[in-house]
Image 1 (tube, helix red, strand yellow):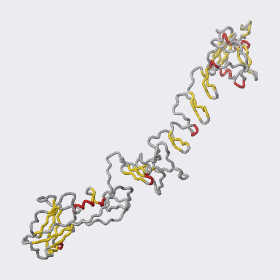
Image 2 (cartoon, one colour):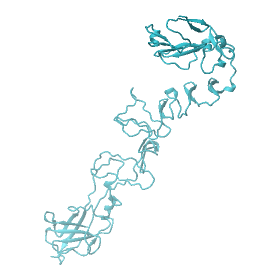
Image 3 (cartoon, rainbow, N blue to C red):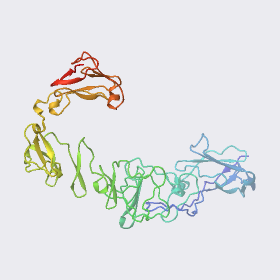
Image 4 (cartoon, rainbow, N blue to C red):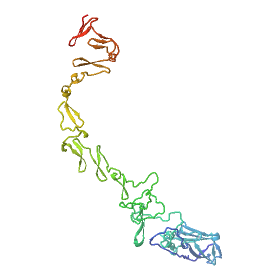
Length: 466
């Protein structure tokens, strides 16, 4: 059966639009939901047969489609009302809400669209009906095809139950991503394009820069605690009696560019090139071989380089200094014995010896001792109080061998010289042992048995007559 739609489509839609011109502050707490508009289109018409007679009353299957072209092409949206959703027709009249079973939320009404209608098993009616201006009001609920439900509101909480990102802002330039202002148009928070966040400052130099006091009820953890500028130091004014406690094996790292010994000045810890004398150091950074350390001021040390030949260590202006020996004054007087001297003002002549008399030294010529040092070459003779010998063997005996002459002989020898010999050893003779003393016939004198020797002259022995 062919049906004829004699009524033009009537669309009624009411839109309530809230546009956000600016956002002063965004509350990201969980909000309540807002009532949205009914995104359905009211469509009415009258069905007649080819004789323009209204069709019989009853339920009819109807299909509605939206196209972007007057003819041909594929529909961008289709809704079929059949089975339990069939349309009631009375006296040929019917009324439906397009979008009641198939939502229109995915349709872009910001373009020219055409409506196609199919009744029961008939072909789609022709021509398609163009969508007028009233349905285009769907766009009033959007901004550049973005639903008003996706806008942020300044007069109420904004919320989402989606598991995707709630707010997505892309800043491709060098400007700030966001900046928030308080009373008197004062900037209270800034988010830079590099990700740095500033609280109380519009130029955060780190990931989080806070200008002002922050109160934290829990631990604050970071790899570094750095001042908000290079001229202001970080402090911990409310530290306990244990001051700053650091746990872990890596210790406390103050800064990666802090090198050298640490020192504290008025509570501020900084690096220095050397440790001063006040803190147990020397204040020096280098030394040369031979350097001498001395104090040149209260709690201060300095160094004096090694001296050179012809200089001695002296005192100049109250500090050590090297003084040339040519500038030293002559020392006069005598040096007492108690101080390592002789207490004498002159020395003796050549070949004299110094003798102590208990309180002072006196000088005596060696000639008065029978010793003439000027002729003392080689060995010390008998006339000079010596022996004339150059060496001795353990156990040897000394004996006179002539005028001012001394010889030594081993105690193991049996020959005494001058034709005398002993049947034992000389050591036995000296010790009083018995033995026989024999006079050689080839000695300085001769004799026969029974004769007695006697001195017939100086150093002359003669045998008696028998």
